[in-house]
Image 1 (cartoon, rainbow, N blue to C red):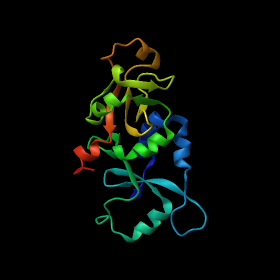
Image 2 (image 1 turned 90 degrees about the vertical axis):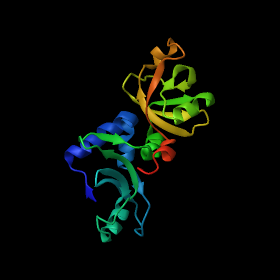
Image 3 (image 1 turned 60 degrees about the vertical axis):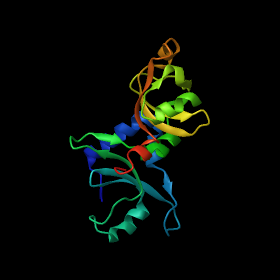
Length: 187
C-alpha cells in the first residue's frame, strides 16, 4: 500500500470533485478518531494493487506490519484504476459521496427498483432534483426517504428536465447498491 503520486491524486480528486464540488475539502480534511492516539488524525488516500482506498493514517501505520501480498483491503475502497489507466468510482464510495454531494436526485418509490437493477433514471421516476444541475455533473441518487441508492452523471439540466417527456433519460447510471448482489465476487 503506497500513497498516490501526483498524477493519480489529480485524477482521483477530479473524479470526486465532479460529485462533491467544493466539499472535497471536507473529505480531505476530515478528522479521524480511530486508533490509540489521543488527538484526532487525518484520512488519506492509498493505492493497493489497482484500487484506491480512503483510510485513516493511524490504520495505515498499523497495517505496515502486514505484507502487501497478504493485505486484501484497508479502509474504504473508493475506486479503481482500469488497465487503460482511467479511474472509476465504485459503489463503496457512495457513503462518502452522499454525505458531501453537491447535486442530488430523489426517485419515486416506483422507479427505485429499476435504478437498482442498473437502469438509467427516467423523467417519469424523478421525485425531486436540486437546482443548477448542468449536463455532465455528478449526481447522487436518493430514495424519497433520503437513503442513498447510487450515483450517476446528469444527462439533462434541471431546466431541461421540466420540459422533458416522461421517458427521457435524466441521469445516466454509473453505480447502485444493487451491485453488492450482482457483482459480489468482484467487490
